[in-house]
Structures are given as C-alpha cells and as structure tokens.
Length: 140
Image (cartoon, rainbow, N blue to C red):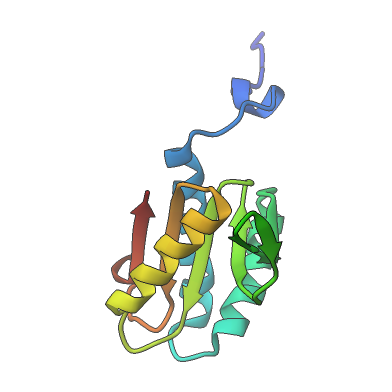
C-alpha cells in the first residue's frame, strides 16, 4: 500500500511578504512573459495593459497611473505627474517603448522615487529583442 501526499510551501499557506528582490524578480518575470508573447514594436500603453493583466493573473497587487504630487513650500500640488505602475506598494515601474533608454529616463525615475518616497524603481524598455537588456533597476 502506497501513501500519497502533497507538499505545500509555507508561502502558499501563509501570506508572507516578499522581499524587495523577490518582488522585483516577480515583476520582471511577468514583464518577460508579456514581451515573449508580444515582442517589441508596440505602443507603451499596450505593454502597460498586458503587464497589468499578467500581474493580476499572478496575484501581484499594483496601482496604475498613480498621481504623484509635488510638495512646494509645504503645499501638495498636482502637477500631472503619474507613475505608470506602483507594484506591491513599493516598486515603481516606468514603462517605455523607445529605441534605447536615455539618461533622461534615469533622471525621471530618480525624480519619481524622490517625490513618492519610494526607493526602488524599474525602468523597462519593451522595444528590444530580449527584454532582459531593456530592464534597469534604480535605487535611491
């Protein structure tokens, strides 16, 4: 007689928060899945929509087009800045579909991190043959 049993990981039974590295790994995995299915050459908005779907399928929480106010002399002002995505309440995603990431993209990400009070961001350029070459992690 043979016994059969299943082994569940602790994280599947208990909701254990992911580390920053684990979360960014999951985000990049979701983005790679989107890129694998769509390839380069589409609009940024298309990748954003599909990445949101993929994150939802994986149970990863996110906020889309989240406003980021500028605090000027103690007053919060809505100047129209929006994060493409805020994932897990702590990782900013700035999505691009451009020929190449430029230094201005780094500057924008650093500004978003400072304005929002978050410390980790991922710049993702989907207009590359291999997405891994289009991902840049920014930490402040």
